[in-house]
Image (tube, rainbow, N blue to C red; front, top):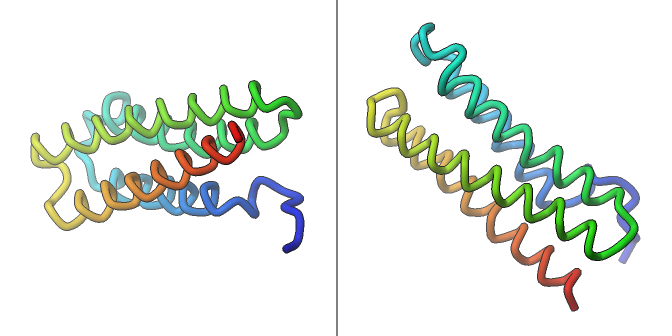
Length: 120
């Protein structure tokens, strides 16, 4: 198996990046008054997921790596909360919500696996 040279080769980053792109797409049709509300929050938290994964990848020590991966998990949980709010107030239809929440759960599982593998 070939050694991973870049954070962009991590499955968790790839799946997280897909989630970011999907969030940007989904929030494009939100009401304009949400530009500095939910749109901004959801985009920032989704970008934070992959940014923390990237930064964690570049760290040498296990403790530091894990710290950034935990921050990514925090941003992921924040996004999941914002998705629920968006669905409940009618900004996201059921299909889009289901797609986004499924992607977020997948990223969460992969991230948990990565953290566990580093702890060993």
